[in-house]
Image (cartoon, rainbow, N blue to C red; front, side):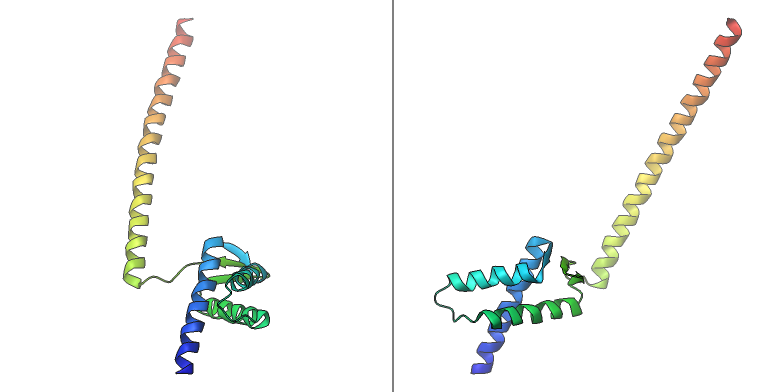
Amino acid sequence: SASRRTDKGLRSFSLKVCQKVEERGITTYAQVADELVHEFEADETASFDEKNIRRRVYDALNVLMAIEIIIKDKKHIRWKGFPQSPDKEKGVLERLISDRRREVEDKTKTLEEKTGQMIRLSNLVERNAKIL
């Protein structure tokens, strides 16, 4: 039916918008719209209405903002990424905490070693000063 074709078209179009923003990382509405307009111009098999394409880009970007996949700051659009499941996110955060703890332990050990070296060096300077 016509509505199924439209759904599929809107879905695939939204995915194209999503891919463009993800590829660029930081972009603008105009850059995404221009790029997609040029792609549709090059595809002679596709029906082409520039205003409609630009409107659909705008709509797709608003949906991506609403579901927090992108962040819009004035004219710039930044890719944030797809949300993760709470369990996956928890795992990522636990690994991050574990890595940071290891870093702190390593730096604490280095600090202790350097403190010991400083004390020994200070004692050596003091001893040499007495000799002279």
